[in-house]
Image (cartoon, rainbow, N blue to C red; front, top):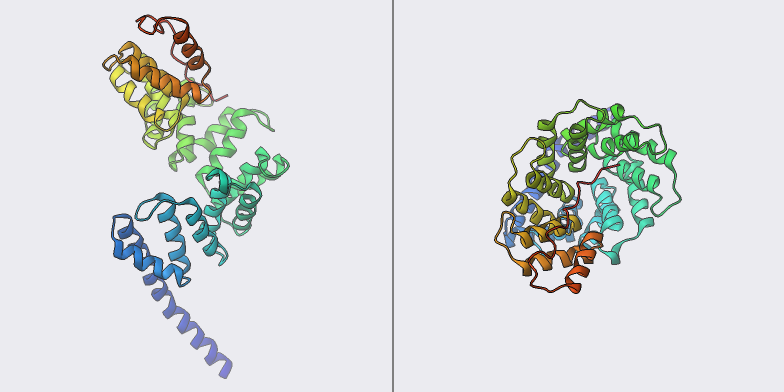
Length: 340
């Protein structure tokens, strides 16, 4: 009888704790939101809770430091907060710690640590980490390449309808890497990933509709998905959208001014092809006021980023008079890159 009463009491207490925990989580989320909006008081209160060991507050502080919104941006500080929360089995924090260790600042990168955090969360069912772990195994990053295990982790993520996992799995079928190439099967995986707002999947789906690989050719849908990816700040998509507007592809009327804007958006993110094309736009005055100085600056940036045609163009500038208006008029724009 006493045991039954104790079990009943535990159940009542657990039921009462759930709403309290939910209220605490909502309060911490609100503090983080206000901190991102510039509230110094909210940021201070959130940091106080994090310092005291509140797991969700640690996670939120990590994102404040990672984004630089509401706090000074510092990947190192973000990593510290994420790892503190991850050690308490907070799986999103473990994943974010892995992401910084994989693709963060050079001094923080540690592929083995990235694998460790991804595996920790993946083995506990966290789909985002399953996708990332699968990709690292397939690419052999920080570990000997293991295509079979990598695909198995991607399949686990895709089974949970995790967009990144669906996209990466679909790209294996699209490229024929380690499996027989199957465009139609790739489409069936990449489409839901794109619908789940994975920007790389949106870009790939645009190219599939634009080429008719794995799906019926549809330029209107190709343009729609390309815009979606570009609006999510994917540099490859922004660059290709610039090419579309410059040349009048996918059924749109040529619009050099709009093309220049998309090249600029991709170029400011370091996309070498967009930097080169923007340089040609300025040199020739396509949709913008002709400005050889800006042209040379953008072409130089592209050359520093390894763009071959930009490097050749700079060499031409060195060999001929700088004021020759025909210096690069005959240099063709870069072609849209085939994802194969």
